Image (cartoon, rainbow, N blue to C red; front, side):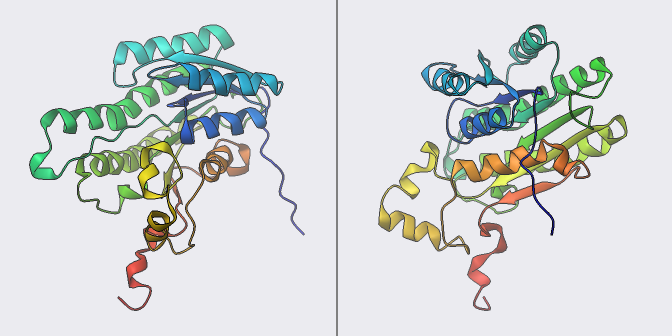
Length: 271
């Protein structure tokens, strides 16, 4: 019988962007629970980030909060300098920051289109680039890990499922899917792993209207073969695994944490 063990990230230094709430906060807590030192970054690093940091510290973990707009190159560079200056390096980046600005395509403004791409795709590029520069400069394997560095990029089931009224978001996430694959291909020979996670319907504030009452949730569940809405901890568990040596031979893969939403459930009864 094979016995599964909880991933051990003891002493590893992790940066989680968009870590102030929802999925990001759950990831930060999971990383800390596995022994990692966690830097929680958000655009408005206020009470939500502080609450997550305080909970980690009260549990005996190591955490700090930082503020940065991931679409701004100078702020991203400053963010990584702060982590490295404080902890001497970085082992894992969780590229989680993202936004939605929804509109029908004919009514979508250029500002809405550009802002979502700037945060969701360019932001991931900027953070991944700084992480790789940091990993290469360190030059040695990260503490307690076979890889020299690890990046997990947050995407969405809408990297493959079209989404009317959310074209800017779907396009940005489709870009993340190919960013993961291309970056993993380019960096694998250096011992740097890059993978993605694509959540489906998760109980977070951004989609509260879709699950906040029984009728809305029942409608949403018709899109989910597994017949339940996911929780942030479901996504955090996947990110934790992809950040650990338990997945050391996994590279360039996007893991769908969606209860089967990406399986086109409308075709379950032969279409």
